[in-house]
Image 1 (tube, one colour):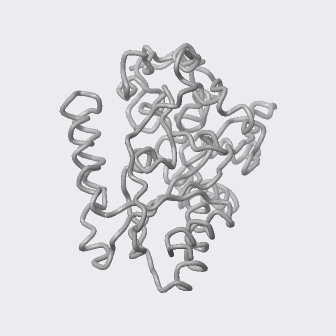
Image 2 (cartoon, rainbow, N blue to C red):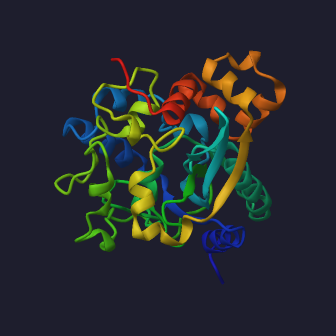
Image 3 (cartoon, rainbow, N blue to C red):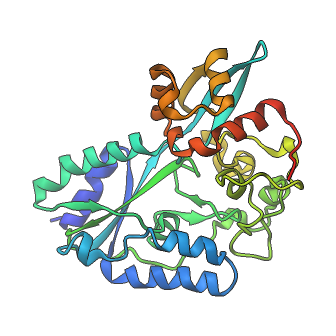
Length: 309
C-alpha cells in the first residue's frame, strides 16, 4: 500500500504539478544557508535583511501542527503584452513567476481537493523557493543560478506550504547544477551585465538587470537601453538556454493595451486614477504589484532612451 505522502504527490501530479515533501527539521538549515551566502559576499546584506525579514521560518506560529514542507512546481509560460505606441504595436515579454496569484490559486484549489480526503491540511508560507526546490530534488540549478524542473525548463512557478502530511520518505538532497551546464557558456555570453560567471556558483545579483528594474531607483548610466527585454525582470539567459528550447513558443496570457492605455501607463497615473478595464488588465497580470516601476520600465522598452543618473 502506498504511503499517504506518495498518494498525495501522485494526485498533485494528476493536476499537472510536480511536488516534493521534506521534513520540517530542515527549515533551520535553509535559514543558515541564506546567512552563509551573505557572509561569503554571495548575496548582499541589504538583500538578505529584506528577504529574511519576510520569510516564514517561524512555523510554530504559522502552523503549530506542521511536520513537513511541501514544495510545488506549476508550469507557467511567458506572457506577451502588446502596447500601441506612436502608431505601432510593440510586443513586450512578461517573464514567468510574475503572474503569481492565478497560479497560486490553482495550486490551492488542488490542495483543497486532495488533502482533506486524507485528513491533512496546509498553510501557505513565504520561503526561499529556488533553494527549497533544489534541496528537495524537485529542480536543479542552471549556471545562471535559475532553477530548472524536468519537463518545465525554467518556465514554472514555485509555491511552498507547511503541512501535517507525515514525511515518510524525505526528499532532502544536496543541491546540484544541471550536468548540461558543464562546458556550456551560452548564458554567460548572453548576459548583458556580466552577472553570470563560471567562477561563481551564485550570480552577482548587484549586476543583474532584474535587480535594477525591480527597484525604484534610476537606472545606472552603464546600463545600455537596448539591454532591456522584459517589462519586469530579464529573460536573456533563459531564452538562450537549450533546456528551454521546447517551452519558448508557449504563452500564458496575451494582453493588448491600446494607445490611450499605454499613454496612461507612461504618465504614471496612480492605480486609483486608471480606468477600470485597464486596472483589470494590470490585476490579471499582477503588474499592480510592480506599478511603482512600470512607467519607467515601459518607457525604456518603447523608447530605448538613455538614462541620466
